[in-house]
Image (tube, rainbow, N blue to C red; front, side, top):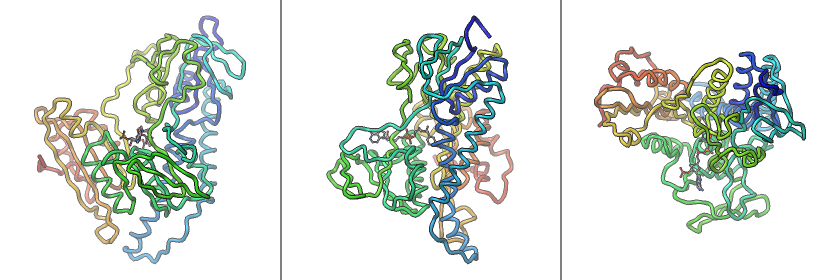
Length: 450
Ligand code: NDP
């Protein structure tokens, strides 16, 4: 241990980034403590990616049952046992959180339960107890953003959604980002009547325009209703229902309103200003080494970066540990991060969208194909697939790949390696297709669309 501090590293926040940094640092020989105010695992494990994915799986079976019938199975889908499923899901989350605890203890990380806040450049305060460290890492993550309008106290966020004891029948989802489209798909699959309200024409701003339009159309075909170019102005509770007033002065009544309009850093309890850690509306300002304006204080994950993705926080935590305790000089690359939206159908994407590529000065060749996957050839249940490849005209390097369709999230991981390796379209084409799959389209698209 260094310079008379209690620890080499104190981590505030036991989510993806914090746990990875703590464990990796301890493995490298550092004396590490981690402070967490609730369960270990953070948003991803407790109230995000993992429980959400279980719910996506649960809801997909409804569509599968329709296809099964067309394949000759005599199936009847009954009611979904929300309470039974919830208790199984929650037990698994509890198990995973316990695993995190065991992993940390096994690595020799000392755990403190409670709210941690900064009390100096090298000091963290937990329940009135001071601990000191050579380095402090803030990895407190983010929380849902709540806008300000009359009756906003009636909305649910993704956090509360996971605690619902029964499925709401008629639901309005506000927002058109990852969480909104994923939760809309879940609720629709489980039997709810779902509308999405967005302030623009299309969902998923920032994604390739063809992807946005295609997904919106596919979701509409699954009876998800899009209320576009409107915002909520107020919500009034009437008995157990909620009357939502929109910006065009129309109104509709729902059983629940789910707010999914982005996330903000969860830094309120940290006392950033007291210690002088610079931030922009809570987002901690860091350099390429994750170092804040106070050199001994670092930050990773949602409270500091622009990505809000678990694997990004994991990588950041690992790189920080290597740099601090293994004499490395690593820098995180934020280019070509593959990502998936678990909408129904899902989206897998890596690299630049068409407009983004043009905005960055590329002349582009566009390859695009939409088709009915073989699985649905025998079925009246249709769910189309879209594949789009964006290629730099001059270098012929593949700048971006975008997939909407079954298993897109699984496909994009492998394609991410190819795009990260800056392979050319010709190298994609040299790869022999796997037949019969949807993915083979990615190496057989020869005709430029434009
Ligand atoms: P996003 O940032 O993805 O989307 C926010 C949505 O809310 C946008 O459609 C935005 O509209 C809309 N919005 C924001 N402010 C307002 C406003 N004042 N009035 C009306 N609409 C508004 O946020 P999410 O909450 O969906 O997700 C947060 C982050 O969590 C994501 O960015 C993602 O990084 C991460 N995440 C990742 C997942 C995954 O990897 N599968 C799953 C879930 C979350 P507009 O486009 O017009 O700005």
